[in-house]
Image 1 (cartoon, rainbow, N blue to C red):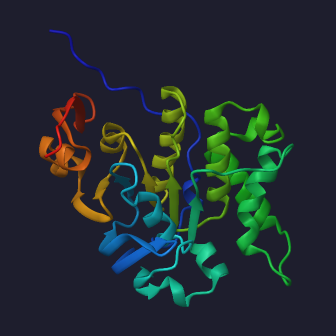
Image 2: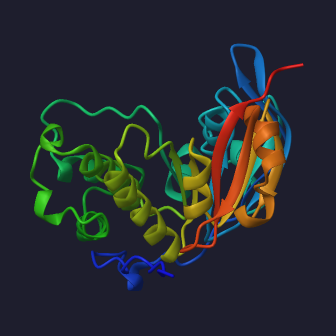
Length: 285
């Protein structure tokens, strides 16, 4: 019988460990209602995100994943309840203070034409600037660390529009890394990327968590989420229907409840995580 060998460890740069986050952050919600245009999308949500780990939020289109992520970053104000950072309501904190603790990469990120990788990453230092604090050697060092973490030093002076999809996405994440926040929120960071570029981005996500950051990402592919997340949050119709370690919560019944799909759930022989094999759409009613 042939054996399955684990893939070789990543050999590229990782976050410089002597510059890891000094304190992990506890992000949670209490009875949170949030939405937009007068519509409530996320309802009465109580959620605590494990600090220093990768959490993936999964669920069908329109279930509230991106809306929840926006609320965690204070982009969307709660209609009721609260988002808490280390026990304090985000609504009571200054925007600059929130930006120094929580970094967000939205799904549709855009940059001006001609911007280089280094220019983009420098934007991550904006929350640390002010009238009495301009660019410092500490800012330059943070940008250098972020470029190193994303394996982009050799591409730092290249225009963004000359990069591959995976390189460009890593540049956007490097901008968030340069922000040096304890919490990193990523909305579908692997969307529209091929398999190789997806792995580039997810490697960087693991490096962020290894450096002590709390990482929360929205993912569409359930098997990918199981493989790369420590903690899974499954949503449907604005509520959490299951959460925990992927191997403990992903079952054929959960797949049916989330997506209306009959599926087989196997175990990845290398990672030991669930692999979802869809079979057929379940007839409604």
